[in-house]
Image 1 (tube, rainbow, N blue to C red):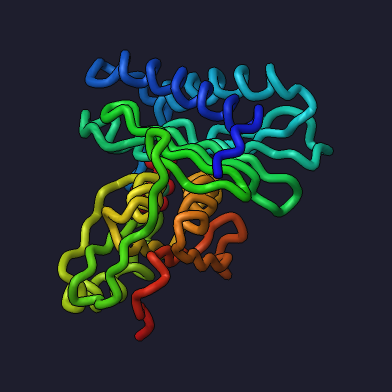
Image 2 (image 1 turned 60 degrees about the horizontal axis):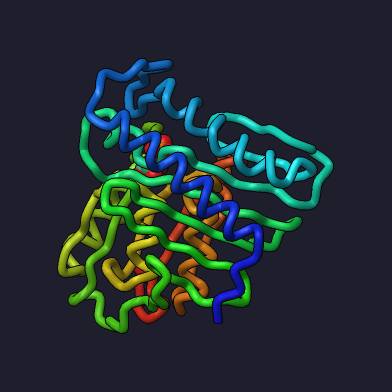
Amino acid sequence: MSLNTPYLDCARSAALEAGAFLREHFGSELNVNALEKHDIKLELDVQTQELITQRLLGTFPDHALYGEEGIAGNPASDFQWIVDPIDGTVNYFYSIPHFCISIALREKKTLLVGVIYDPMRDEMWAVERGGEATLNGKPIHVSGRTELSEAVLSVGFSKTGTTINAGLPMLEKMVHRARKCRLMGSAALDMAYISCGRLDAYIEQGISLWDVAAGILLIEAAGGKVEMNPRPDNKDKYSIVASNGKLDLAD
Ligand code: IPD
């Protein structure tokens, strides 16, 4: 069942508009706001979030917005948009065409809408609470694979030495047990790929809510499972295991 509320429509148009903007600048010389050891922050991240903010809060002026590039809107609102304007910024900067826009809406703690858009492949994943997960309008499901030996897993490495060190033992273990492990550089696309059965699981030790909020709703609606735990050393970061819900990923 597709519900198509104004929330979903607005999230989709904001993602399409932002996607066109990112496509236009892809491969061009980019202004860097900050260059870090394991991360890059672009002026375009900020500009893209501004564009998305105008679209979302222009339509719903009483809502709040929490994004990778800052917060906006009414902080007292029960409705909060969660936005990653470019998930896969390092890929984008290196002209690797694997990145996306991720937009979710929650009411208090309940996710209502999730949209992930890959502008280079023109792929739009969309879902709203109570409806089915879709890719370009068609219903999608997680994979049916039950054996880890047949599974393809994506592993993410976040931005600090601590989270990288926390992820390495998991990679070392999984790389021997799964058919293949991949490091693709966009957590939101990893989540989208699980929702439509391209990947079987995704694991990372230091992810932010904006990277995965839309993906959580997509995976759950598509029949999969997501487990997230706040990191003890950083209250805004989480460890995450997302999967088709059929694999045994335990030690
Ligand atoms: C990053 C990507 C990457 C993941 C990092 C994220 P960003 O998001 O999703 O795949 O490993 O943890 O921070 O910075 O490109 O929006």
